[in-house]
Amino acid sequence: MGPNPQLPAPDKNIVPTVNIAPAKGWPSSAKPSAPQGFTVSAYATGLDHPRWLYVLPNGDVLVAETDAPPKPDDEKGVKC
Image: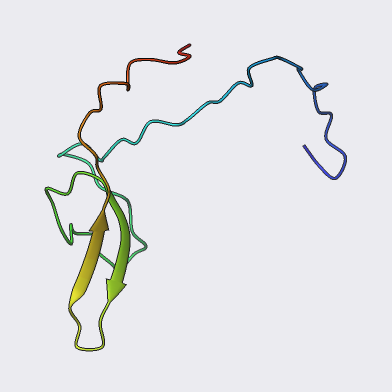
């Protein structure tokens, strides 16, 4: 913390540690809080993996989703 934080020494391994945060949606009963005078509501629901939003000049909104079907080799490889 601060301008000179104490960092741990690097951990050298043959296989690097990769920590990926799982994506979690909001529970159906919860939503983000908004400043006084503002409200929060869902713009779209039922999206599996939305990645990008693009608003066209006419106001239409495009959503790019990413999702791939399971591949036979998905269960192979290094797992922790």
